[in-house]
Image 1 (cartoon, each protein chain N blue to C red):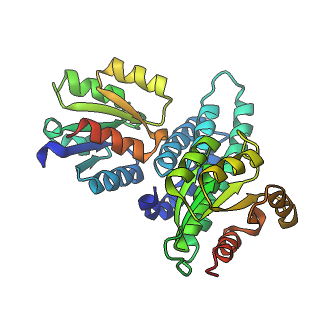
Image 2: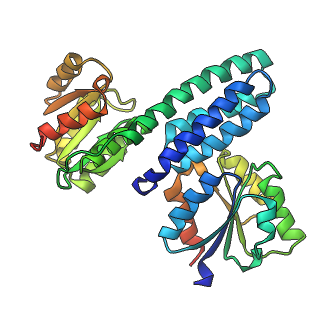
Image 3: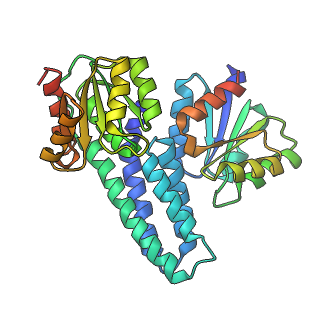
Length: 120
Length: 223
């Protein structure tokens, strides 16, 4: 089951609970972090997939991705999750070194489908 | 989408708070409006509340549009926030609606280009025991009807991408479902439209969700 562990980073409690509920129903083990201090307590490398919201009050998700990649040498799959337009999100994901992105506006079904596709 | 419905009461509460905070800050801190509406847009989108998501995102973009004069942004944002509050209130009404008698899993398809309206109708029908699918475009509607073979289809009279009569004909090519025309005009007007396309029934959105569901129940013979 460890290969199906997903970490979700978002400053919205509601969003974290909604994503956790949907992914857990699909059999994933989900950990959530709504702040940098909560993220600090997670062993990010131990997750198969890290979903990162872009617009958070403490720092932008793409900056967090760049930090995890460059300063922490995290090689887990990291994906941006945001309500931004897909072209902007694609640009941010590529620039930060993320493995991809999911638009919140595509809805929960699209997110679950995406996660199923990358976490086997 | 239905399994996420239990998050809606919490969404309504949080969304109302975000809108109230934004309204309070609209003349002093548009960056707060930008952030709150962006977050609200994401939350609504993930819960399948597309119309709220779109309006929230528009409000966020308007608040952050540095090219527009501040006074114009403030006025536009205030207007959008008030509209959003109405949309959120309409979701709240569906959250509070009590369940009614079951109709034993009768399949229904709701066709409406407003996802919010479609979701509200679908929620009301599900509360009454129907198994409901939603389509927000004519093309998708025909596919869903062909796949689901419903007993009843609710069709918005004013879909932007197709004439009502054309869509009714296309649905009848694939299904023997009873068609109910739904519209935001008075009962007599929507009834006249329904007769023109030989639909089995009609319902006015002005009568409210409960009355529309009751009309559907009567049509399928369980009221």
